Length: 359
Image (spheres, rainbow, N blue to C red):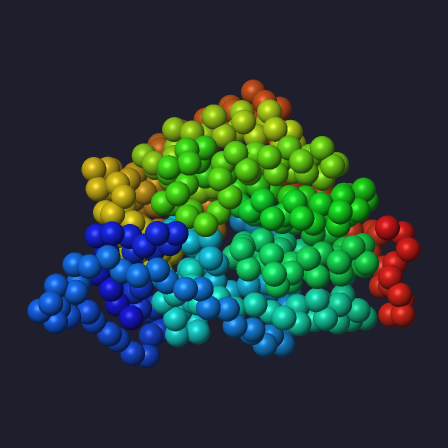
């Protein structure tokens, strides 16, 4: 479905469009029926959740930009509604919109734990850290009831398998028992993503995520429980959140973060259209400036997918951001996330009849 930007963005949703994906098999347009219906505020959109049958669970990549080569995405789509999410274009593969559909038409892998156990028991399997939620947040709201992520962590614990998590949700604290057990053997690290410390920016940018104060509390409580926890300043958005880099690093360090990293704004495929519409709806006064800086660090384009530059950008502005971030980290003694690698030598297949006794 193709929509024009709504002059009254839907409460609790990030996208103002439900534009077609690049593989769409049909097209729709909105027409005025003469009764002024296009000017009326749109009703709330309900979230629809469906099971997804998966034949395998572990995704592998050989990207030189990423420190981890294995990942698991318990969910397709994400109710957090972050307008900048680089995973939005993946909804096009199931003939759904990367816009509002991505936030409201969700899928979960109900057999995820069984598939993971099957994978780890393969004779030729060699352990290396697995990232939970590399695309969509493993702790988005539907995890509270579905508990797919928790079931995966239980398998990781039983097999003594290293795992890495990046999240914007305070729900991760529910699993502090599992995370502390893994942390006792250097088998886990958690990165809490903080884009802004301003609740108003967060409200429109990441509508259904935990607030800034709650995310700092996550860092504090996980760190107090012995779970290595860092801050991911991501994404850094030119002329919107870039002025907060030093404040975020300082606040995270004060909360107990032991590491830090950052990622520049990325606008692949349909995300660039969604993000521009969001700018027009919420920051019309600086939309041109934002996109000018984006193109400045992307070789004159909205996005550059080349390895080595896609996460950081290039040029004077990108270099300045990197220097500021590194200076802030030095000031607060925060190393990069790979400063203390996770262990792989403890990996072992437990007996099928019972749980591993080590924990």
